[in-house]
Image 1: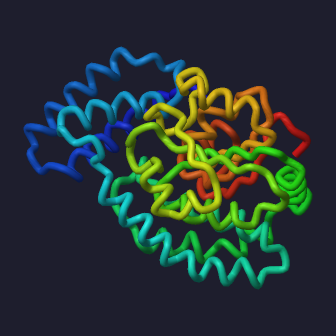
Image 2 (image 1 turned 30 degrees about the horizontal axis):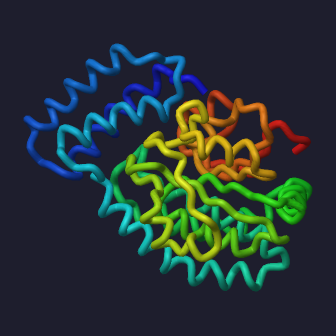
Length: 290
């Protein structure tokens, strides 16, 4: 997906909000924004929105001399996720189709996304998880069944992580994977917004159910041409790829290989471009029959 003009004001607001997480100094924030405006004027709009966000957040980190401005939010997200997971496990275990409900909770966790809004909203988070069991009943049984069968017969499954906190529910889903596949869980190479890195993945317990691998870059998505050669080799050889979140959808939905996407639609630009509604929960496969 190329960057839309409508992405620009959203990214600008995100930049201001992100800067204010670290400093109240308006002069510093003004300097940051002036640098960002200069970069926006030169940015190639044929690139994806996550690549624009990478550029913007690199400027923020440099000006603030802070390699991880979202550190505290990531900690809060993981801690909140671990608490919410206790109820999720009960719901999953008692469900007629535990795998489908685990998928739903993995998508519910996608609400722990501070890319568009840098403010913690407990009500929105609670409501997302409260919807999970009902959303599972709305999934297409054929689509869920195909994903289940592919995982069961796979030798290698690569899960592309998205946000800190959300990773807790990715773990719950991985624990319900059928078969004996080797599971790889991809994280960002270094901090960007609140995306999951190796640190948050371990805090979420991912290391107990999968091998954690880095994609080598700080883009809040997966741009294959910019990932490390080691990651690209894993990507090309995996039998099944499951991509979490909007950033991965924006950067991978035009790929030629088969990819499963699990996400909530939170952006009106994406909703309009792909004929969805804001708030839709997707279990979607590209380059496949579903």
